[in-house]
Length: 143
Image 1 (cartoon, rainbow, N blue to C red):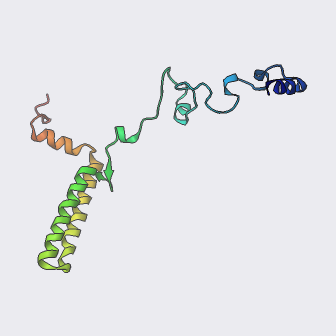
Image 2 (image 1 turned 90 degrees about the horizontal axis):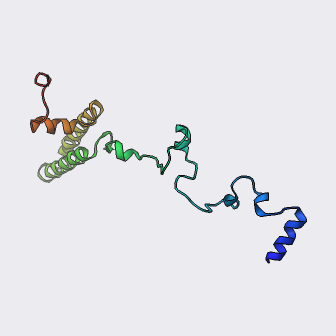
Image 3 (image 1 turned 90 degrees about the vertical axis):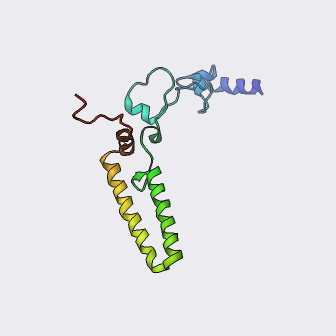
């Protein structure tokens, strides 16, 4: 097998495999070859210019952005929906289907307020918690 390949290469005028492939001889088959961290091309790295030495990876949005549900913070929107669902079930139990529109409208108004709060400040819940726990100084005490 090897002698047949060598004979075919001599017929074509190729002295070695590296003569037939331009560039890096380890990349002749198009797969990873000898894979190294940071050796591949990345669209994010290509836009930024020359990459730094070492491993580079794109930063996921979930790491630096707070997760939202329909525009409001996930925890508060789920808690608000659960409270209104419970209220809706209570209203349905005691007064019937006609009155369940009230909790639905209440949920819609409350969720709209949560969306507006999130658009105003993405960390509004942390700000309220800091104000309650007295770690957040008012603008007059800050100096």
